[in-house]
Length: 253
Image (cartoon, rainbow, N blue to C red):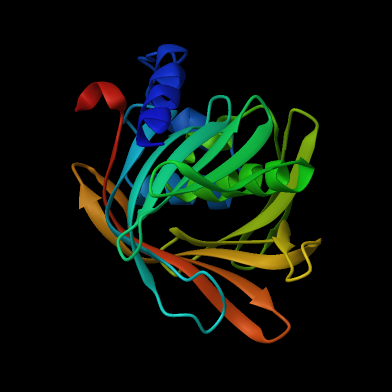
C-alpha cells in the first residue's frame, strides 16, 4: 500500500506545473483583508506560490473512536491545491494496519489492509468525496495557495475571520477560517463533513482543524502542532493530532 501511495504521489507530481510566480502585495490586496493579513503575517509575500507539497510529519496519532487510546502512526502525505488532490499513507505502530487515503479527479477513496495483504475495508462514495474535499479546504492552513483557486467563493467576514466555500467536480463545501490576535489563521470550522455513525449511515457533524503552535521554515511561519476533531452529541472527539516537521515542494528535497 505504501508503494501505491508513492505511485499516486509520483503521478500527481508528473502532472504538476513548476511555477515561478511569487506572492505579491497586489495579489494579497485582491483577497479579503483577513486572508491578506494572514499571508503577510506568515511571511508569504515575496515567496513562491506553492501549490503542491509533501507534508512531512514528525509524529502523528489517531484515536479510532471516542474514549479510545491514542495510536501512534507513520503518516506520509502529498497535497495539491491546484487540482485539488491529495494522497496519504498511514501505518499504525501498534498493529500491522495500513491505510491509504486518496482524493483525485473529484473522487475520494480509502482502503485499509492488515498485514499488508488482508483487505479490511474499501470505501468510496459521495460522502467520502465530500469529506476529502473538505479536508483539502482545511489544509489551506498549510498551503494558502488554495486561496487563489477559482472554486473559492468568499462569503461574509466575521469578527475573527472569514466564511468561504469551495466548489470542485460537482462537490461544494463551506467553512470558516478564524485568526488569532496576530492575524494568523489558526482554526478552520465546518458543518459540511459527513461523519460515519455506528450504524454505517452518514450524518453531517461539526468539524474543526486547529493549529496549536507555529514554527519557522526559512522566511515562513508554518503550522507545527495540528489537532483535528469532531463535535458529537457526546462532546468533542479529538481523532487526529500530530507535529509537522516541514512543508516542502517535491523538487526542493
